Structures are given as structure tokens and as C-alpha cells.
Picture 1 (tube, rainbow over the protein chains, first blue to last red):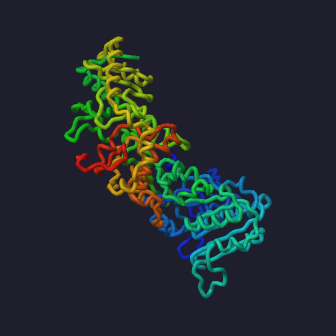
Picture 2: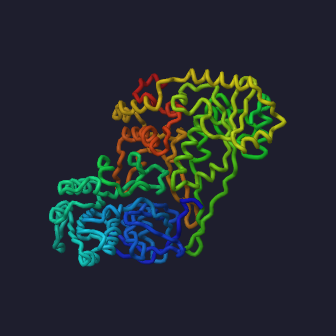
Picture 3: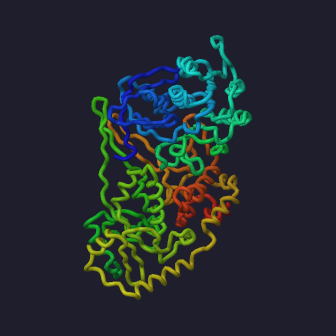
Length: 264
Length: 332
């Protein structure tokens, strides 16, 4: 069987994160499979008959379950969200490089925007479970409305693990008592030494956050960005995800900001 | 191992081969030469077919696997790949196959490609007649085969000088041993003379570095305005290998791999609608940059073999190697 033949995984659990976003827990049917991954890697998930799409892994390898955070966006994600617990999907991977953890073991800023926060949850939970290996950690997360904030029940546990968590929304409402505004505004408040950073979100947000961090003395090559590109194969052959000489699926999706700043 | 095959024995030679293996050869059709299964049809060995033989390694559509559903669980099956012999492919296309081997062989290697590749024998016809748009010599791809193949044949006037390069090539010659004659020193000399004539007739102004300079100099906005975005260039390019993966059939069906093209507007468009290469000019530039900047970094070789097909097929008034807008009349 070729690289393109997926493994089968059963949907073991579905958590509703927002009206259009679910966190699904997968269980590989072949339990002997040694499925190891790093924060920042992704899988190709498929619903047979409808096709495949790349989804970043939202769980940390330090914990047992494999979780993907899926937002209704296209044909395949719609089909996955219509699945019930017990249904079988195909997955292959993990693909991509993941975050360079060994170079991030100092003060870390984690900045997420919208659904880009899913891949950062993997990193946050990893750091939370390996807390002693990292310095000060500050998390800045922005979503469109308070309805669109993911993983709200976990913020407390991150704070207990000694991480600073700041959240903001673009559009406030009467129920929302928190910040309204841009993610960059949250970063101003952090008391951090220049260290490393992980960013995932819309291009405008990535550039704004990176600029802000550079002002704070962060080096370009210490700012890691998880890039989103159209992908089909996941193994660097189909050429959909190329950024110059890089294949996002193999050389990325995590790039240092100096590698990709011109194309964001 | 070398041997000489008289021209009137070519058809018996192919007959012998086709009894053992499916032979794909350039057939003479009303639409020009076309690679297809040979079953005694007339051949066209003078012109290089517009559709490259790499389509037999990376078909326009192929089944990656079939999925069969039972009680909500799936079993997967792969189709078997029949052995094939590609007959009379040109050195430029052989060079393209060497490139594809490097691209699909980079880790993790693409077994769907190599299943076909391993089942395919290659017989190369060295180019003793040059097409109008050819510039293979500028890119080190021809006119004599530069890359590994099973059997190399050269038209030396009254027959073909055959050189087996692999054990499979020796077996091909042995299968038709009674049709062959021993090769003579004069045959080698005649081959060298004819190939030198072709090489001398090649343009010299289309080297890798010259085309790279043209890419830097080109007015991509103007070229983008002329480009029709049809993707024709990438479907006839023997090096182009972009593909799409899609499913057909519920609950049982097949996962297909289909050829795709980075020239098409939706190629890199994301689900949300954002498109990193929005304009035709950006996409055309990317097509060239991939071949002359990015593929050399990945494979160590230029991603162009100088076959000239993109220029032949392009309906827009664009000179595909000088990268300039042509007058419309020049193209017609």
C-alpha cells in the first residue's frame, strides 16, 4: 500500500467548541499503530467518498488522546462535522515539521487568531506538561466574538500551570466582560524577556504580532509561524502548498518568520 | 551490448516485443504523433508527440486505491499495474523521467509513482532530427540520451544502432536476436556524426542561466495579461507533475489522483477564499520559478528539458523561452 492509503480511525468523542467548530477525539482502529507526533504537525483526514483535507493536531503528544479541532469550512470538514461518535474516517500522517521545541525552551509568547489557535493548543498543553523545560509563557488569543473562543474550559488549567493567558474578541457583546480589540494589544501587557514565539492566525495578524515582537527585541528567526496552504498530498509531491522552494507540508507548516515574511 | 537493426526489420522487432509486453509507441494519427499501445499501426518516428510519454508514469487520472465499506469499516485494494515498454521516447523526455524519479523519490518516496515506474521499460530513440522549438542541448538533456534507460536506439540511415544499457535492455535484444546483426565501428561513427549535426543546429541562447535572466527581466504583468490561464503548457510539460486527490463513489469507491496545474486560478486557493497567487502573472512566474529556481534546489537539475512543447501549445502571444509578449501574427 502506498503513502496515500489512510489508516482508519473511529470518532470516539465530539466536543462542541463553538457553533461551527467541534473538537473531535479519534481512536485508531488498529491499536498497535505507533502514532507519534509533535505539536504543530498535521494529519490528512478523509471521509470516504467526499475527499481529504489537512487538519492540524490540536492535542498534545504528552496526553493520550488524538484530537482535531474542525471548523465548518468546506466539503470535507462539513462531512466530518456531520459524523457521529462511532463513525470511521481515514487519517494519514502525521505530516510536517512541528514546532522546534528544543529551540523554544526559554520565554515563550504564543499568539493565536481564530481557528489558528487549534494547533497552538497542542503546543500549550505540551508546555503545560513539560513546564520545567520552558521559561515564562504568555498566551494571547483573539477570536471574532466570544462565541468563537475555543477551549475556554482549559484557560484556568493553563493559568494554574503558571502561564499568562490573555484573550480578546473583535466584536464585544453584552455578555462579554473581557477585552475587545487586537491580539497585538494583549502582547503590550506581557512582562517578558525576548525569547521565542509561536504564531498562527490570519496573515494580517501574523504580521502585526511579529512586528510587535520585533519591537520588543525578539529576533526574526525566533518567531515561528504556522502557515496555512492548500494541500493535497501531504508528502511534498503535489505542489499545491509550495512557498518558493519550500513545501509547506514537509518543510513547514512551521516556518521561522525570516523564511516566510515576504509571502505572508 | 550493441547490435544493428535494419529498418525493414523494425516492425518484426516490435511484433516480437509486443507478444511479451504492452508496447507504447509514437503512432501516426491525423492529429500528429501520439503515444499509444502499438498493435501494428503505422509509426511516426520523425516528430516528438505533443503529449509526453510521462503520462504513462503519472496518468491524467489513476486509481490510488479502492475502498470497500462493510459495517462502517473499510478495506482497501490497489489495482495491479501491467508491465509496459515505452518505445522511442526522446532523450528530453527521458531526462524528464530522471527528474520525476528524483522528485517522487525524495523522502517520503511516492510508491504510487514507483509502482508504475518499476513496471516500465524505457527504449530511447536518440534525436537525429530536431523539432523547430527544441533546445535540449542547452539544458543538457539531449540530443543523445543523458540518463539511464534500458535500450538506446539511433537512426543511422538504413537502420538503427541499438545499445542495451541494462539487463532488461539485453533481454529485449535477445528476444529478437534473429532480427539483429552485429554492430560495426562505422555504425558508431555514423551515429556520432548525425548527433553532432543535430547538436550543431541547436540554438545556443536558451541556457539555464539565460532563461533565469529572462525570468528576472520579464514584465510579468504584461505576460499575465496575455496568458489565458488554460494550463496547456503544464499538461504537455514532461516535468510538470502537479496533482489533485479526490474520491469517487459512496459507500464503495476509489480515491483518484488526477493531474492538476499551478497555472489554473484555483490551484492554491484556500478554503476561506484567500489565494497566495491571485493573478495570472503571479501564476505564470511561479511556473517558471519552480522550474528554474526551486526544482534545481530540490533535485540538483533544471526543471526544464528544452522540449519546446510549452511554446508549441501556448495559444497566447507569448514567447515561452524569451519570456516576451509576441506580436499576435508571429504565433499564427
